[in-house]
Amino acid sequence: MRKLILSRLAALPPMLLLVSVVVFLLTRVGVDPTRQMLGEGASEAQRALLRHQLGYDRPLVVQFGSWLGQVFRGDLGTSFFTQQPIVSSLAERLPVTLAMVAGGTLLAIAVGVPAGVWGALRAGSAIDRLITAVTSAGLAMPGFWLALLLMLFFAVELRWFPVLGFTRFADGPGMWAYGLVLPCVALGLHSAAVIARQTRGAMAETLRAPYVRALRAVGTPRRRIVYRYALRNSMVPILTAVGHEVVVLLAVSFVVERVFAIPGTGTLILDAVVRNDVPVLQGGIVLVACLVVLINLAVDIGYGLLDPKARPQ
Image (tube, rainbow, N blue to C red; front, top):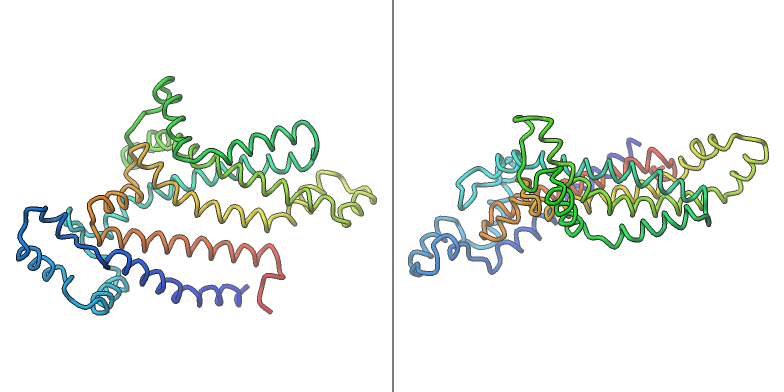
């Protein structure tokens, strides 16, 4: 495990450097934030002065080196429009996004894994066909569309939940959790269908393995076969599905935040795109890239813990 962790950690710096280069080029090449900041009526002299003040008239290599040095020092710059440090803005909004993703992930696992196991244990039965039909419907529903339906039914029609708005955790933990119910459900149901499908396939294949038939032949209790042997040996593909879905939930949460007017990281990044706020956009994308890399690192470590063959010799 030590070799596995060290090898994965050694691969992180080159990966993050490559991501930084791509992010910088996409947000700097051909981008002129002075048009948004000064408006269309500004003269070219005013634009040139602002470009000089922002450092946009320097060579790209110099700009990238300066920006990367700031990132290494933990300084992501200042927003062009709010004049607030980007680090503080991200630190304020990131917990909201992580809470949504964590809630959606827990819901997806709590629903998807038992449904998949249940379907595998009753393969070919009416229950299995029902679970397959429900998961197929869940796979066809995008998260943002489901968020709109949940808002329309539970918030507008039944009025069980607030339509829009968000309560900070410091202002009331109960209302904070209450306001995250619909967003977490909107995020988690599609992923639950993916995990259920993967769990069902992995469990069905494992239950047909020769060692399972041998365990049945010697009289091993069914519950012990299912939960101690079959489910444990199916955890690698299930972990793969969970790791992939966490990354998907992180991306979909940006749109769900917009639907429910939740002030999370996604809302901050989308506002930066609309306003062409380049420093905020760069900082937000780098943060998301770091989160994705850490998620993949956790999945790789999970592989090593579950399957000794995944560990380097």
